[in-house]
Length: 299
Length: 290
Image (cartoon, chains in turn blue, orange):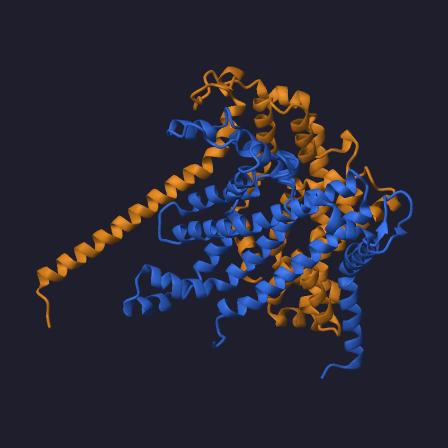
């Protein structure tokens, strides 16, 4: 039995050791959370004190700001089309790498490096690669016989696909996580499936995918959160253009807050983003019960 | 039924042939995709070494001839690189120290001290990770404005000393794997809680601490939104800020832009090669245990 003196000492020590984070949580999470909810009902320019205006910010957002809807759609576009493609690409490469092949660490390095390249640097590099007239991508497409390749970042229809393409280059982080989980797929299960006459696809579909499903869920959730906050690439490469095709939610929010100094309005946008993120996370978690299997759990 | 030996041998040979073909296909796929991934890096470096006439040449020039080194000094002339690098390194170092110290303390509390309320603290920590940064961004900006810290590096470094939910979580998972007997033994010898943390757990947790340090360093080196929000004086700019400002002013100077991007990326690649294993293990730890 633990003595009450020891229990008290533990509580004191526990609080003491955690106190930096607790202080950080109160100052940089809890207070801002409450304050931004309050600001969202205010007109606030960060110079004079916030002035309560009720639901006005939300009303303007939903009825008078076409850019709000545009940026929301652009962001959802990235989540609906970009995210699945990059999750699949990361898994595909991980599957290729998950074999007894010589030089595997060299491949892994090549695939991983783009994901830790500074975003501003890789954005600058891709602006150059995607340059419609002299960029490497279009000159190569020309040589392959495509006479009028897309203008990428200069074409409203191709700007988002161009950013998705650039995102594919940086799938290394998710790829490494998949790779580690693939190495933990029980060999006995795969062998048993082979003995039962399962082909490659059947083994992948019915053994590998269920085994790594918790990691798929992890990458999906992290990917969603990241996509909703997509900012730097758009700020550096296109600044929202052409014709608002890359005006993403976080960029619109930033502009309203720090260019127009409409901090109240931006706070309302932030809360809408928060609620959308929360709903998506809950939906994913709810449906995940159907496709995620945890080892050691009977289903 | 017993198969004749020759038939068995031929089947085995056929099987090996299929496996060999499969291996070849994998290699071909890995090499061709690998080339596609490496190509942008090659283009980055080679563009930086080309004279202007070859940068816009049609068809593209693959190997710069002659190799032009002057783009580097030119870029370094336009962008005060030494200053920006120093600013960035300074922010990175403070952030790394602050994060490692504060996160290991909190993780120790959550993993190694049995106290009432720690489950609540842990649950709060997990929930706080899903909160989008945009929600806290504006009030946080207001706090730093109130403190008079806008334009200094303090908004970028000071919060690191108050922990980071993600890294606390990572370290906590690692601390949980250290046998309980080790800290019990130290306590029997009369060690204080802090001594157990400092002398027993921290030395054992070196790989995890290095991982957190590396991730923090790279995150801080690559950060753009933070400097964009808080740095308004060119003399305090980081490399990310400097490069972005340069792009918006001299958009078409591709050789110089590529030279600058190379210089900014190089330290990250060097760090990666020095600590490759820690890196991969760290990424894995965040994902698997998550």
